[in-house]
Image (cartoon, rainbow, N blue to C red; front, side, top):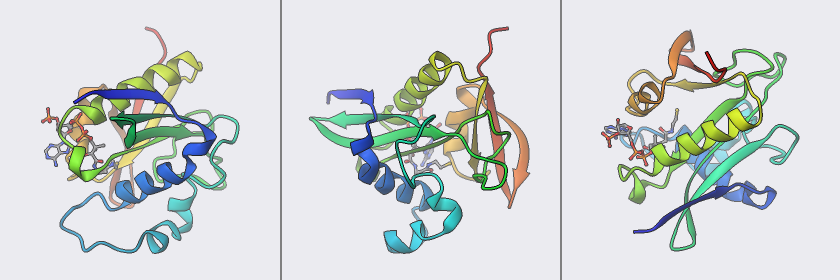
Length: 164
Ligand SMILES: CC(C)(COP(=O)(O)OP(=O)(O)OC[C@H]1O[C@@H](n2cnc3c(N)ncnc32)[C@H](O)[C@@H]1OP(=O)(O)O)[C@@H](O)C(=O)NCCC(=O)NCCS
């Protein structure tokens, strides 16, 4: 299997939307809700609406030329924050891999590529929100994210990107 990681473009909006749906429906024990209903949640929609605005960046994983996963970040304002909001200068990341392609290292490759991008863009840190019993928490901890707070029962995690 050959996996390619490439930068996300404005045209990837619909695929990122599909991956946002996967991220929101992360628990495979839950009954599947329709995509439009899940993304109609105004806070969830904030992660993707108007994709391609200044500060947005992402990476897409492809297998045989087909997108199978994505990780991206965007800056939020305190008046319309994401679930893992830390401050207006810390982009918050979203990540998902299509179900058939999980546990093969693609999520790790996406996360590392996105962290490299955030560092190259000069961001001081990245944040995210994760349910404590979501196994993806292990992935974030392994890459250096630490818990900095809680919001609606989920952990807010942060990765410091500044050189020490
Ligand atoms: C989280 C996600 C992007 C990880 O992608 P992936 O390609 O499966 O990631 P990798 O194969 O690189 O590594 C996953 C690591 O995360 C952890 N992990 C993720 N899902 C897991 C699961 N279902 N069971 C056990 N460990 C899991 C493990 O530590 C694993 O490492 P290991 O395989 O060496 O044990 C993917 O599982 C996914 O899309 N999940 C649903 C959406 C989601 O939860 N998004 C994040 C919301 S905060």
